[in-house]
Image (tube, rainbow, N blue to C red):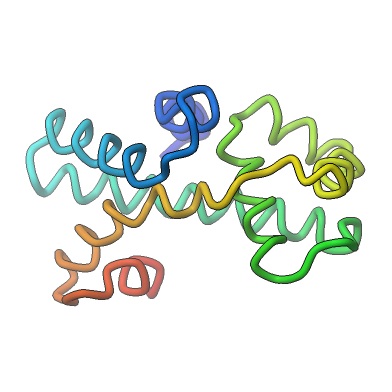
Length: 142
């Protein structure tokens, strides 16, 4: 999935613009993909979207790891995924100036957890790979 398509998908999810109900957002994402594509193509789109998300999260983690010093593991993960969920402009700003991530952390200006929006599509990915009841782990395992 190219960057333009990834950021369009993130924008369509509406994290914080439409609230932060990750279950609703995730189910809506799944429904939109399932309605737009044949089943096999939908799985491919879901795999590509999840991989692109993971790539953005990993890059931001590397960028902020030595800068954000006020959060522990799970909260740090929530901050990172929240920033990705806010979209391309916020992500690019924090990548360019990591102190913005530290400031967001200090102000407790993030929500748990944009990553959870991907659980529904990861359940489908896991099922397509033959895993049952652990789709999130199956989706991210290669």
